[in-house]
Image 1 (cartoon, rainbow, N blue to C red):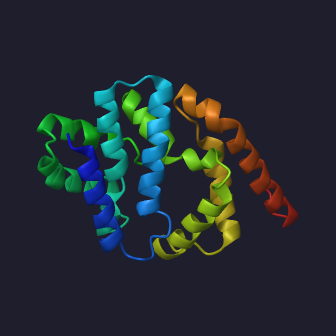
Image 2 (cartoon, rainbow, N blue to C red):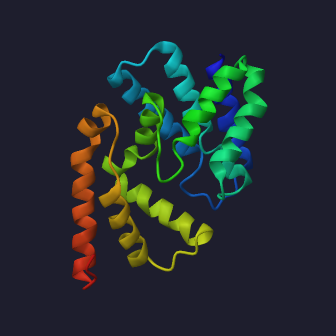
Length: 198
C-alpha cells in the first residue's frame, strides 16, 4: 500500500476539483481527520498495517463531495475503489477502507475499532480550541447546501448535535470530551442571551 502516493493524489484531486462552496468539507478537513486519526490510533495501540488502512480511509472519507453532498460516503467509496488499486491496495484492503469510511455516515455507526477511531477523528474538532472557527465554516457551507436560515438556527442544531454526540475511544474522550462540553455550554449561554431556550 503506497499511502504517501495515494495521499498526494487524493489531496491534489480534491484541491483542484472540489467546488468552492465547500468551506468545511475540503482538503483542510481531509488533512485534519488524517492527523486526528493518526493521534487516536497511536493512543489506542493500533497495528501499523491497520493504521495505514485507517489513514487511507481518513484521506478518502469525504472525497465524495466532489460529486456533491448527497450520499457522499458512498461516492467516497466509489472513488476509493476506482483509484486505490493504482497504489497497490488489494480488493480486501479497499473493502476494509470502505467499511471504515461508511462508519462516518451520520448518525455514526462504527462496527469495529477502526470505525470508532475514524468517527472520533472526523468530529475531533468538537473538543478543540478551533471549534468556533470550524463551526463558522461549516455554517457557511450549510447555508448553501442545506439552506440554513441563520446562525441561531445553526446554534440550535449544534446544541442538539453536541448533546447527542459521544466519543467512542478512550483516547478521544480523554483528549476532547471536557472541552466539547464547554463549547456546548457556551452555545447555550449565547442562545439564552437572545431569549432562545434549548
